[in-house]
Image (cartoon, rainbow, N blue to C red; front, side, top):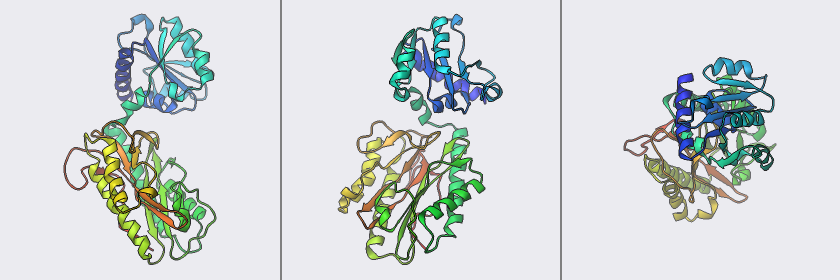
Length: 366
């Protein structure tokens, strides 16, 4: 889809010019993929600013011989440089074309790499320029994300049929990941979290050898990746009839999530979305048991802008996919988290956005 990527590059070129740079050197592999379509473990994009002299040439993609055939196939409108050491090769090319003031992605660059490039160039920080462009997704991106979420829902339903006492956290995680691949995921979006019983007090518990037992709450955080786009969903289920305290914190988290989903509207401050869910939990006396942010953006990365925490800045906009995932974690007892991926849309109603994960949010008792 060269036209789509060319349009993205044009927006980045305008922003580069606004920074007063002659060009941008894009070194984040995710950002290179977003601007070119090339998925690679070694790629750099040299992007002259809008209004650069014709002698500076157009955008140049650098990669090594392993990815050169894919680059020629997927990026036919780009000049290609095939070198193992892509960053210095494109930096030298920039200097030779009179592009001396070059913006770089310092947030992903080591001091050593930055020092190596600064010898012949005047480096200026781009900041999260491309990440900002990536926040609002086009319909092609949203379709890929929706498919990733659909696979996640289907795999969770299939794996849940095999959940039983005696099965370990690790075994269930493996089963769920196998179901995602069987349904068409290119890979899992992240390492699956399965936290049972007292392990549920740890939001990012690593699945271990603990066997499920009657009376457990089991939190499962999972997602499939499809076409490069990452789904994210969490459900907490009960193995056997839940105790009163388990039902209480589940209902509390469900109410907090409903409040967060309702607040995730076009133009909403991200901190206000966090507060909408957090206030429900704090009012119930569990503020100390909810330590993480209420959600984050998803796309080519599992965690990307916007980050929705109490100290978050910025506002939501239409076509921005985010998660809403409040939780309550009781030390040594267990916890509950409920998470969905949704796309912010204009509109009204209890949930103004478009939910991409659709597994029931009612407590499932197995």
